[in-house]
Image 1 (cartoon, rainbow, N blue to C red):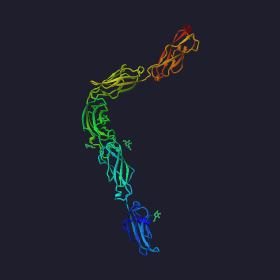
Image 2 (tube, protein in one colour; image 1 turned 90 degrees about the horizontal axis):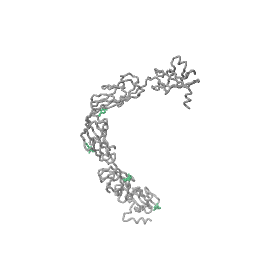
Image 3 (cartoon, rainbow, N blue to C red; image 1 turned 90 degrees about the vertical axis):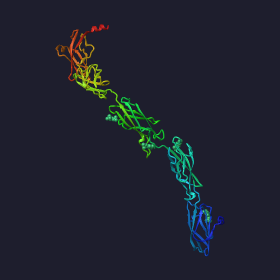
Image 4 (cartoon, rainbow, N blue to C red; image 1 turned 180 degrees about the vertical axis):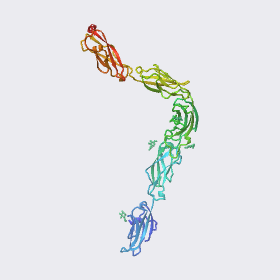
Length: 544
Ligand SMILES: *[C@@H]1O[C@H](CO)[C@@H](O)[C@H](O)[C@H]1NC(C)=O
Ligand SMILES: *[C@@H]1O[C@H](CO)[C@@H](O)[C@H](O)[C@H]1NC(C)=O
Ligand SMILES: *[C@@H]1O[C@H](CO)[C@@H](O)[C@H](O)[C@H]1NC(C)=O
Ligand SMILES: *[C@@H]1O[C@H](CO)[C@@H](O)[C@H](O)[C@H]1NC(C)=O
């Protein structure tokens, strides 16, 4: 088999005496024969030690240095062996000499990307030439040789809209750039690129995803830096549009980066105005949010700002182009007097004397005109008002039992205008009503009496529950009444009247009864019960 190795000798100078030697051999398994050392007596054979790595050796008898396998530059680029010649007994004659085998790289490795897939982002509307990222690929072949020199190229772009060559990769550096300005997220929000890297022999393809994003790097710019002024009457209804404003924003339409929020930055501490944005057009409508008041604020010097809901990217800031000026002049309108309250409430006892002060109402006129007061709806003529001071007094005696919540209107007038408020006077109860008999007809007994009869009597009182809940019934203190009649309590509001004997004539008897309520102090009433004694017969006849 050695003769087969020798067929690769070609015209190389391949034999010579033993000495230090260097060889350069391309990697791979093509070369088998390296060199043949010649021997001089007493040497009869050769021996090699060192980095033979199982593939390099020397034939002892012939001195042929040979390869039995493939050298691989990427695994081991240099092999060092020690070679010596030996005599019959195996003793060294010459050497050891160093034989160095340099493995030459051949382009046997494909380039490799450091990532299987790259993802890049690019802001829409970026300038041509903007960098998206750098692709890194390596090749295991020898550095700084053609074998490892890589070249990048874009193979395909999907989708090919709005053009098919939107991206560019620098051939030597792998820097991916934008060629065109025409990236628009609404046309395509991401692109798939196939990028190819080649070392001249091998090539590798890598996927690159490019996402088109929107970034808020544009500030809203007002069409005008000053909208001058508008003059409005203070009576202008709340919600009226007094001005339309416009700013524009270069960021992607329909996103928080381009939507504009208008605000009163200065001159409107009480939020008297509000600005509504039309989300389609970014037009702003300045409206009144509260009633204007010439007397409080006749002029507004407003500074309006335009901002985006999304924050701006670092390095971009709102500037004075996002501000505009506007003045509002408010004109006076004669306004009616204003009451401090719309409803005044008072509470007094129903028995207070006439001319008692029960309430003071107060209204002011925004223009400062004198205000006069009057009452309306005082149907019971219970009240009067001091037209200058707004003090309300009782004009007659009050009565809770007639009206517990007395409601009147208070009118405040100036020369031309008037306004109204309500005054409700709550009357508290006083025990000012004595009890009454609460019966449609007087009690009666049938004649002749047989003993044990009794009649129910009931009392009532116009005052509040507290006063009439319990009544005390008693007979007047005269001998005749006491001898004939007896009264006994049934419950809080009822009692029984009974004859004390049966010897009554058939006639009407007057029975004086005294009823007390439990008020403090209690009120008492003396009533004459006309107890009538009828004949049973009359009753029977009536039925038949
Ligand atoms: C060459 O290598 C093969 C496999 O490793 C081995 O069997 C053979 O003996 C080797 N030849 C020589 C001359 O070393
Ligand atoms: C890329 O864009 C297409 C269409 O615009 C969309 O359907 C797809 O989901 C996007 N892919 C990614 C990873 O954003
Ligand atoms: C804001 O309200 C306060 C308190 O009501 C008032 O004193 C001030 O004048 C108002 N300012 C403006 C500009 O309306
Ligand atoms: C504000 O910034 C924008 C760019 O963001 C610029 O075009 C404009 O001139 C600036 N305005 C002023 C008043 O500096």
